[in-house]
Image (cartoon, rainbow, N blue to C red; front, side):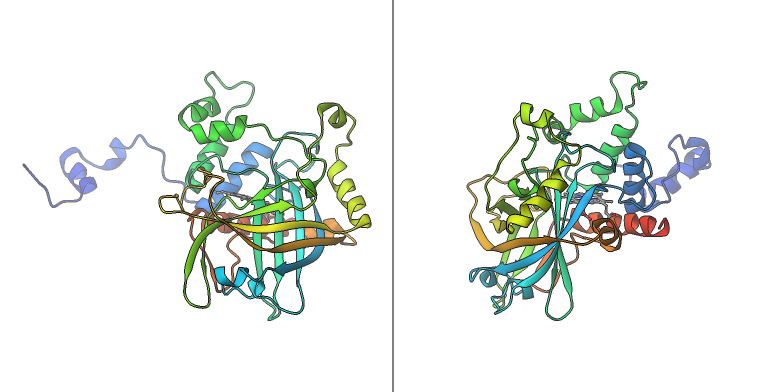
Length: 334
Ligand code: HEM
């Protein structure tokens, strides 16, 4: 067979002239993937100066985390070692939409972000959603999903870009079409880490897993009739009222991967029969005086990690980069 040692592009130029005359494709986007992702959110939800590109509607709360005795067998991370005093946490619950005025009565996943403040002054975060599974496997595919949504307005010709995307991406179709029941409270929903992390304990033993947070109050949802009577901001009002009566608690679990479970594909939820290790309890105790001022200064990042925990799914690094772009844009507008 005839083989050339010349690179394909150079060969094309040699045989057919400059590539510019061949090139039908648009020039590559000079922006980073992180910027493209934030632009894609803006294309769907618009630009809201000073606000997060996604999950802009939320409420900031405070509390503590107490690890179980078994947490240290999973990881040497400082907050997972049993100590006399609990670890302070800052928590932000949010609506899973880029629209700051989205009513709480809308069907959507909810977000929970937790920042652990460690005794040595370092911080580490958890950023989770109330749906087990992501629409796509990679950050590039997520950008394409958002671009397809953004290009599918009422005037888009049929089949619209998002109809075409969903027809070829079954996990995205499942995510979009699955019911997302309306919670009684942010504190009556389970939350899922979706992306996998690698945990190393003091003896060097490695575990791959995904976080799950189970509400100690149980999972409780509204009927359609109850929902019809709800205020568009009922979830923040409810959690403030709930905390006046006592803490809102979550059990932090690790769902452990078995051989064959995909570590780098968050669109596939692992089966419910996987081993779960209880890592501890998050106890949310109070609201902050000015939630809107507090959330502007906060950046929760899934890749903000401490020794003993590493990103296993590449989406975690891509997510973190786009959260930083969103922060730098919202900080400029303040
Ligand atoms: C490639 C995939 C993803 C991208 C590009 C992305 C992008 C973003 C961006 C830009 C923000 C706003 C950040 C800020 O301004 O501080 C955000 C917030 C958030 N995201 Fe993602 N995200 C992705 C996947 C996920 C996944 C898999 C989860 C859950 C497991 C998640 C949960 C959240 C939550 C809870 C917030 C709100 C954080 C807060 O309260 O500050 N995201 N996301």
